[in-house]
Length: 568
Image (cartoon, rainbow, N blue to C red; front, side, top):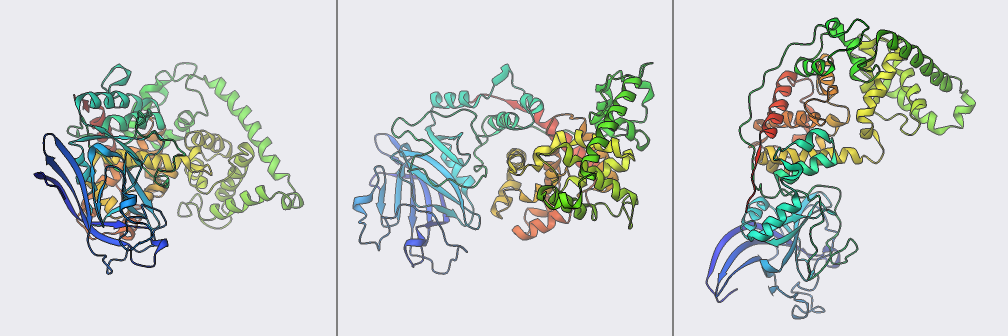
């Protein structure tokens, strides 16, 4: 391909080029390889070479691609000669491409049809190469090789698009400034992780650990500025994170050992003569460390879930209970007084009632409080959920909320108190149940970012089996692991999470702890997407809560001890 001496930097076979299948009845899967080479002349030039051989009629990708790429380079299309379609910066010979890295504008990870991942390289002239499918893996190795020569900066408007910049000290310093590696005047990795539960926290967290995402818009290319409407951009993919890039300037360090404590077993000693809680932070620390003894849960939960203020006196709590009782029954009367005729004309309420009746009939029926027919516990479960529909018209009832209420009702043994504890719990998780599911998508993205920083090898394996989206963790996050642990363990887990210690997103670290506990079973096995999903689902009731909590806290301590250094 070149007349100058070449040094091979990277080579990977098993890379398939894909062209527009909808414009041709012929097979459009072309096996080949990708290389990175240095050309040594007066100056060093680095090129990406992609070459495809004869079409492999035995390889079936399992779907029909539905995207458009450069359609004028296919050798059997006489109506579009190759010479007239060669973008500036490319060298093309049939299915051989060479692109100087100085001309690389962006890399984009795309996912089409049945979920296969593709890499799309685009030149500074805005011309994309045909999508590349790494049938045998190798994208991580390719990115490591590229990182020797360029910086890949995530686009803020598309989490799967990465812009290329020269890898010299000035540009790299600017890239680190854009990523705000040492913002807020310190090098504590999780300052924002502790204080902000969602986008801001993990935006900052991901900036420090890896080049996953950018919080600020990177500078536009002076050659080819891009906008969201730019027609030369590759098609917008589904909502998924971009691929992992190279860890840059971060050392996680060793993971410390963690021990758990004893449950909180004293309450009165924390109260002053008027009944105020003297040291709520100490109580939260004890609850986080060991949970609460069963006899104290009924009282302590009402504080943890905001039914009673920590600084309230006994008399004030009596007044709160009286007011809240009246308010509850006013709302309950609203739906109880609706006649059958009225409900026939209220499809929304009728739909809520049908969902609630269906879910109540199958919620925790193994527990004696809800077992058997005509159980009063089931009636209370139904009535509290119906009343919540009156309390929160916008949200109403969504499947899974019965799972949240059942332990509250079991512990409080009281309709009114369980209702107001539910409203406090829903303040923490209501976004999980919103129709858009944006909060759930965001949490799965955050979990993916965390796991990539903590265990890249496990992430690589999951990605290779089309499981990198962690969709099997959806139920974990939706109802806070309610169906993964025993009923008694869930009481402990939830009270630990309600302390909001040591950070707002501790439930994500619990998910990481569970996943890492299964790495030995997953990595090196013959698992595929279906068997991974089956294995994760079969963990139900088999997980050791204390081990999982120790692992999650150890992860947290490992992260806060992380030392960040500038790379100049």
